[in-house]
Length: 225
Image 1 (cartoon, rainbow, N blue to C red):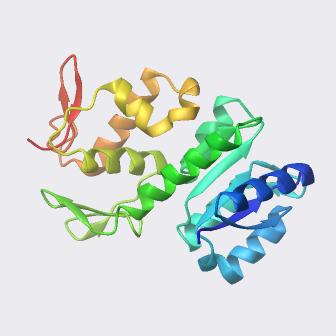
Image 2 (cartoon, one colour):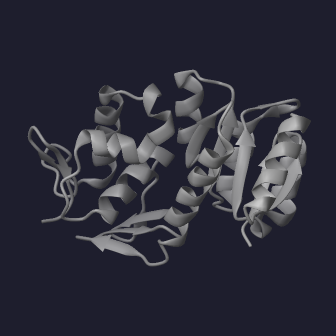
């Protein structure tokens, strides 16, 4: 049974969400603040399969909890928040969050997002490789020539998307839809251009002549033949 850690300081949301998720077959444990969440993750982080996390907490913020979860357990993280500004979205995703859903949300929609994130983690048990570049989805590692590359959360998700679609041309709209989905309204075309550029600078021998992520002029991007 999938064990979810819910970090939320609104008791009414905790009660309603716990009841709903348990009816959907999930096991739910909850804490109200940053301090409790950090202590629980430090002691028993491996007992959980996914973290549902509010950004605004009574004794701190969810960004700190997200960073700790990714550093110690590599847990999938979905932010639950009333914050709708672009800064919160980008900051959360850059700190390692796998998805973002704004309050108020439909419970069924949240379950769909949870299952989508869990599938991404569950279907990636093997190391993927292309021309000396390797990605280990289970551990979240990217390795080139025996050296681990340090990618941001969005850069990693972008690279994983290309690995999972080798030989397929991905349009810009498809990439935005796959990566950001529900937070897509806060991301524009220019943001994607920036992340493609940053990713190439880290994985390519010569970013000006990319061999991993090639531009298909007027159409999109492609990895592989």
